[in-house]
Image (cartoon, rainbow, N blue to C red; front, side):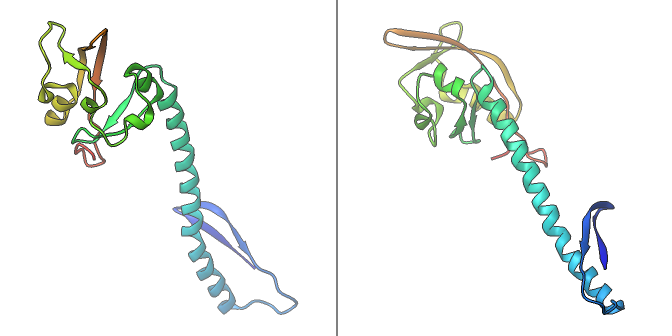
Length: 167
């Protein structure tokens, strides 16, 4: 006896049982159908888990492989993760990022293109977090004794499925 395993009209497989010479009856079919109905969510869950793992691996490789630095921070400005390019640009290590604010990483001073110091509430991250809108093309001059660095920053808030700024 066999019963189809379907999820949203999509065929997932067939549940088949065999037994000796005794024929199956309606009660056997009902029991097998109930068993199949219990298997479908588990099969769907396993499929979705596999697809999610593939998607995560794909986007993780993009995140790590892109040449520009990417720093992900929560709405409080605490760094959640950073890619290898960001680590190199900001001259730190991955351990130096996790759980810290960007301004706490090292003793860099931040200035605008015109040379005016950038206050914490004026950073691209703070502006994007406050407005919920992207801040693009913000040029920052990082300086500390003996070193100068210019970088262009794009800060884009991540929104959840409901359109709210996430995390």
